[in-house]
Image 1 (cartoon, rainbow, N blue to C red):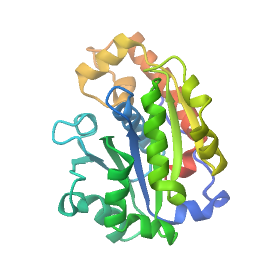
Image 2 (image 1 turned 180 degrees about the vertical axis):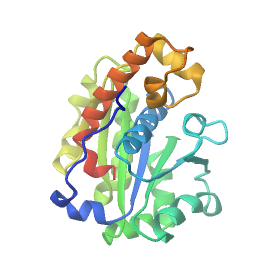
Image 3 (image 1 turned 90 degrees about the vertical axis):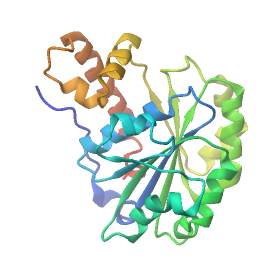
Length: 251
């Protein structure tokens, strides 16, 4: 069985994006919009492209990213300098270009701006020494659009935005599609991706297995049926295809 992989973008086509370290933040409103699911997909996507990264889970020792990607993930608290230090120190203090993926959980735009500002990340981004990508996961409710607007008002043009329509949690995103914040974000170069839904019973099987999606899809164990593994494999391939359009902002 062949391994699920993503097509690599030619780095020579966008050299500036690939020369600096990058901080990737999965963000969104209250729980239930699929922030951690998207973070797990991103971890699988980066691994498929042989991109070296370190992941951080801001949901504590019981965080889901830590559970499913334990070999790459550390628990982190973004509430104070001492706790957030491992993230920014890893990205900025190491030799060579480094990438950090942070599953933030539900936080306000001002909270996010505060630790990025106080930790020096925004200053480094303004000086073109650090790339910051906010991967914002939409819900279908009006609260999600309001929270996105708050996030955008707090961070402005200092970061790049990838807006994710997660069809695993909502069937349509009309409120976002018709919003002024969408127009404002697209005007400054924000990108949109749509991620398909994974069959609910398959998602539950992956959850019980406590495996990354890619490991479940590629497993040969007798505990997982052929059909479930193929459902997961096909779904993950579709997710990777969607993320290819924004790959330059994820590495």
